[in-house]
Structures are given as C-alpha cells and as structure tokens.
Length: 505
Image (cartoon, rainbow, N blue to C red; front, side, top):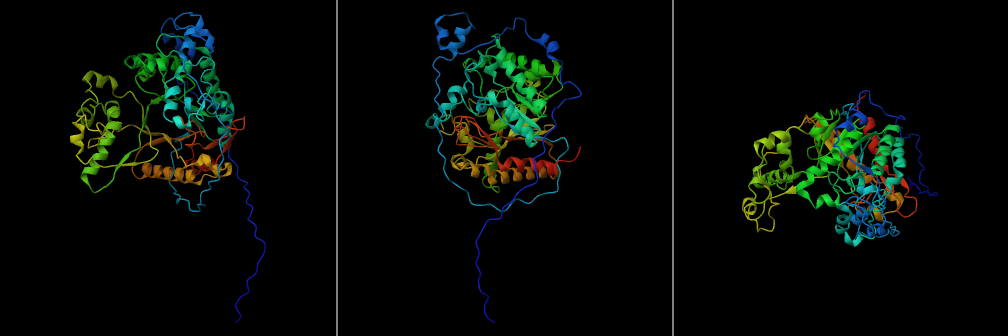
C-alpha cells in the first residue's frame, strides 16, 4: 500500500466569538434597616466646637499668617513637598507562554451571603494630593523613599485620577457585575492638619458623600477603611497622641456615614464608640498584613517552632488581646524591647471589640530557625536578626468569622507587556481560581467560617512608589491623557467563579 500523500493549504487561526456577557448589577442598592442614626441625629455626639472649612493649596499663602489653622498654616504643611511628572512609559513585548491547563473545578458552593468584590486605597489611586483641602500624609514622602529609582513615574499626585474618575470606576464595576467595593478614606483629606480639634475639610467630606452615593446608585455596596497607612504627617510626628487624633477623625467619619455604610475596617478604639455610643449596627474589623508562615521542613520540630514564632510576632501581639482576651505571646514579651505586657484592665478594655478576624494572605512563606537558635537571638539585642527571629506559641484566635480583606497576584514584569498581553492575564486567573477553590475547601472540609473575599485590586495602581508591580483586574493607561481603563481577562474569570459557586439565596 502506498503511503498517504501529504496535502497543504493556507493556515488561518480559528476566529472565536463570545455570546456570553457580564451581568450588570441592579441600578441601586438600599437596606431595609438603617445601620445607624442619620447624621442629623448622630452629629449631636460630636464634640462641641467642631469647625468646618475648605482649603486650596496656594504656595504664596505662607507670606501672610492667618492663625493656627488658616490658609497660611495649610500652605505651610506642604512646604518642601515636590512631585515629578509621569513620563511616557515604554511598551515592551514580553509575551508569556500559552497556558492551556486550568485547575480542576469543584462542585462545592459558597454561602449565598458570602461577600465578594474588589479593593483599593485612597493614596494609591486618588491623586489630587494638593487639591480641595487635603493635607500631607506620611506616604507623600515615604512612598518615594521606598522606590527612589522610579520616583519620576510614581507620582501619587496623579495616580489613577480616581478622585476625579470615581464615577466611571464605579460604573465599570457595576457593569461587570461586581457587587462590593472596599476603599479607604484619606484622613488628611478630611482633617488636613490631622490632629484632634483642628478644622474639618468640607470639600473632603463632600467628595466622599458623592463617592458613597455613587456606589449605592449603581448597586455597589461600599466597604470603608478608615486608614490605609496614610496618616497625616502631623499625627505621625506625635505617635503618643495618635489614638486621640484618630478617634477625633473616626468620630467625624462614622457619624456622617454610619447609616449608608454597612462594613467598616479600622484600627484602635473608635469601634467602641460606634457600637455602644452611636448605636451602629454595621460590622467592624481591622486588617492584618500577613503572609502565613509555613515550616521549611514540616518534619523538623525546630522549623515548626520557627513558623509559630513568626505568627506570634506578626499576628499574636494584636490578636491575642483582641480575640482571646489573652496576654501578648511569650515570644513577644520575652524579646527585650519589643513590647510591655498589658494590665488586666487593659485586656478587659480591648477584648471583644472587633467583629471578625481579617487579613491579607497574598501567599505563603517559609520559616526556619536561626543557626545560633531563636532563643539566643531573642535574648541578644545586638544580634543583627533581633527581634525578627521566630519560635513556638499559640496563634489560634477563634474569631466568629474570617475575612480575606486583600488577595491578589502581581505578574512579573506585566507592565512591560503589550496591552493585549496585559489583558490576557492567565496567571492571575489561575491564581484566583486556585485561591478560591482552596477557600471553598477550607469552608467545607475544615469547617472554617470564611465570610468574605475582596480581590486586590480595582485596577493597576501606585504600589507605594512603583507602577511596575501590577495587581489590578483592570489596566490603566497613564500615557494617553485619558487614563483609560480596560478590563483584564482575570476580572471576568473572577466574576464567573462566584456566579458558578455562590448558592442561590
């Protein structure tokens, strides 16, 4: 038999189209029961003498002093600050290899009331640092110090222009079917001088009024973080009085927004006033920044002890008293200079004031003991690794629910890829599918009450001085003069996962 003869023809790629579209949210969201009294009633809880004003940055205003909190004093806050323009970024072709294998799916379901959505923070996306009365924050200088070699591109004064484009951003979330948006308020935009008793910036409050109302209009539920690392500069210089200054700011914000906002993320004691003075019915937590430690050698007792010590230092110092009513971990107390034990009255005051345990578990990392031993390191303040060395203790905090407040994936050198390559971000899709599949297993197989998961982030943004590190579910074009946003593939895959795995109400 003669062998088959090869044939040839012109090659073309099969053109694929989709008739499946994202499902938009309903046009508005409302809640049958107010979360707190309206501002007209709640405002009676504010201290007497609170003044409201507006500020605009004018460098020449420093010439004529006009009081402790006048325009001259506001301009003086910004003295010495300067920001560089963002140059046009180079586009590079750095295409990843094609990925055809997706992780195996599961038939497990998330509870119908599981809360999911996306996150952002004010300093990383807003821009407009010196506009409409905002005062300087610690990140305005620290953000550049973290990445001086890229400071010419990392202008937080521009960022994503979210301060001006928030309506478009919210509309895009709603159009894609994302029901919850977690964002932070800029403390220094509301209290420019930062400190207790200083004037409140009405323009800042008006802006967040509009942002929150825009969310509700589009059917997106707002989740507010009171402070995301960007405390006012004046407050950072007076850390001993930070609780007083933060409480002043938090009271202003919670009395104004407690009714329309059901979920709050914060730190420190304003949650006590929210629950028992304001009568708030929403839910409050704080977020721990932590990548959980795993022993490098799971069969080695010293490696296991090292992982537990890491968790004690990173998590136990705050979680022990807040959730368990217990003293700081021994690993912290026995490390000289780290922290002093709490009194019984302090423990009683702190315990039980947080609704849920919330953290940002982007990935895992490995721990192992030091060559000289962790105890030797912990007792020797001259050791170069003191006091970050690690060992064993209890880190089970038994909260009523676990909140995954941030999780996301930074694709290596994604900013150097073509726009098409950035949008077809399979690595990020696989990360979210794996992460959420394991979350389902944690709920069903381990009995863990995971109640929400918020992806980081809304869009590529200023990652504390860098734009090369991109976690966004959308791209942002910083060079077209329009700051054009485009959806990435991962956003649609992310939404689809919840469409398939959420139980029907």
